[in-house]
Structures are given as C-alpha cells and as structure tokens.
Image (cartoon, rainbow, N blue to C red):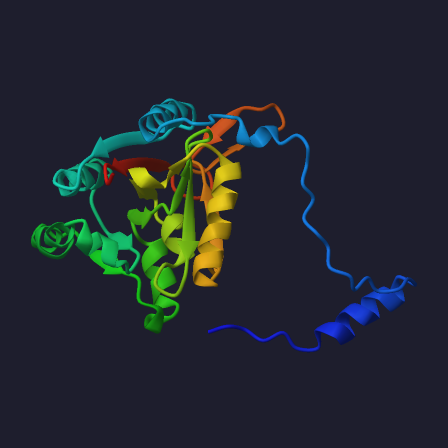
Length: 239
C-alpha cells in the first residue's frame, strides 16, 4: 500500500515561518561531483574476489564463514545449529528457505530430533518477539552484502521480523553470492535501484557486521554484549 502525505504544505510553511525565512519551493538537483573516489575502491572486482575479501574481513569481525552450493546447504546449516547447541530456532517466513531445499531439514529432521523451529508469523503479534528472545539460533537472509566491512543488509517486513537477527543468542545469516557488493557505496546504489523497480522501501533496513560487540573508553573490545554472542555467515554459490 502506498502511503498518503497529509498536511505537508501546512507543516513545511510553519517551519519556514518559525525560522523567519521564506520557504524554498524550487526543486533541488542532485549535484554531480567532479571527484567521486568512493566508486573506485574495489572497482571491477569479481564476485570471487569479493568473496575472498569477505572471508578476510570475517576474521577481523569474529565471524565464522562457510561456503556451499545448494546441495550442501542443509548439511552446513545443520552443522552450525548443532555446534551452537541446537534449538530453539527462529526464522523469517521466507519462500527462499523452501526454494533452497531447507524444508526437509527444518520441517522434518529437526522436529524428529526435538529441535524446536518457529517461523515468524505476523498474525501472532508479540508472541513472535517472545519466541525470538527465547531462541538459541536466529536464521535470516542477507539481501546485500558488503565485502569490505563484512556487513549483511537485512530488509524487514511483515514476514521478516527484525528481532530474529538480534534477540536469539546466536545468529546464522545466509548470503547468496550474487548479493556481494564491494562496499556501502554500491549497497546504496542497489537499494535505490530496488526502490525504482518496486516503488517499495523496507519497513526497517539493518546493517549488521558480525556478532554484537562493544568497546569501553580504553578501547578494549568485548564481543557478545547486547545481541547474538556468535554469528556465522553461510555463502551460497547461486551464480
């Protein structure tokens, strides 16, 4: 549904009046800067090269990373969940899990081994948050992945609750290899392209770089403070 802006002119006129200056109504053109070095970093880097950059960055951000094809994906996901201590597991409601062949693992194998799985259901309201905060593992999917910083970009909507990525004790993020971009510059371009194609913006866009961490005034890094204490990236060769 496309929203409607109510009383925009009245609101902007009041702000201009309080600032004691006339309101600017002429269109503002996007500047064309002579130098744009942000586009030159990792320029013309291949997807394979971006993957190697991502792997190196994962060591810095205390994040495990695995690569697999679709045939091996269920086994890798199961191994990571087992290493993290099993369930409960909470996931988005996303058709890609089924498309990537994870249904037998999630809906048959895990229940048979007493690993509880909860799929986000917006009709259940706050129960989703309760399930997420009591989950051991949260599984999400990266829409855009920044190789330079090791950052995944998650788009939230009614079926993809934002709490799935930060309330569980540990986090698994599935990364299609096709989602790799050099850095935030290209991520911003990609997000604009998505909006131009769909006319839609996600209700929340999260940039997440590995597990939660914090540093005090003496710059002593502490990993696992206010969110997932461990994170694993699983890159899927989808190209």
